[in-house]
Length: 337
Image 1 (spheres, rainbow, N blue to C red):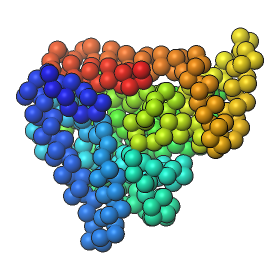
Image 2: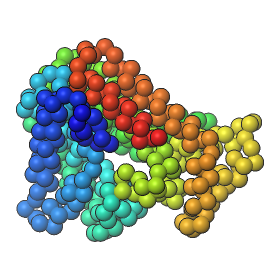
Image 3: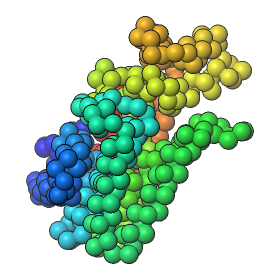
């Protein structure tokens, strides 16, 4: 058994491992090439998060999806670079909106160079992704544009909050499908499409990516509360401190507002609604959520989406690539505990 990709995904086939590793290495070279500029400062800023590392979850999915066609097709690696560049660009913008100080264990771009440079660097990465995309054909351009629209819509919906009468949890799951699921879906779609897989396979891997992407983000929600060292390089409870209502918090609020809500539920909600920049209050809130059933409910939601992703693969023929995609579902669930 060998290990490749994010969170220790096991790949039990040497040929598949070699293909995936070679593909990811080519993506890494492509990312560095795409982030070069004639202006040294732009290169430094654009490569800041590339060089900080990361799970390369989306490129890995491109490589695995490409196994259902010709994995050596010339469009596979560039499409993976496009997806990762787009993801990286959103991180620069997210850190500005969240006023984050740390990303992937290093100073965020906005903390190091200021908000203006961070926003413009994100725009630079979008431009470079579009340049590569143009060589992949009009269908690829349209797919990326539609996904980007969904991504931005999800971010706007998160900022605006649920409309009156809308269930906050349903709203939040829609936000995640747009913000995270849409781009992971593109990774599955590009990998299959660029490798020449048939239309049915392309559709299956697109649906798989959407569900897996949502599960991946829900696992991050759980990790932000439950872990001692956050995989993204962020301090545990970062979302709590910043007042971002992730799924465990929304599950707690739903309990507190229901007829079965307890005084303890409501007291914890009041604590979370207060100023959590104070370290003592933050630690108390984190401990309260870790011990609350809402966290386990959020874990079950993560498992449900991961299992839906796995079930969507059923029509595909049995092969090592399918087993690896199923393994990704297991890995995402494992992250959530």
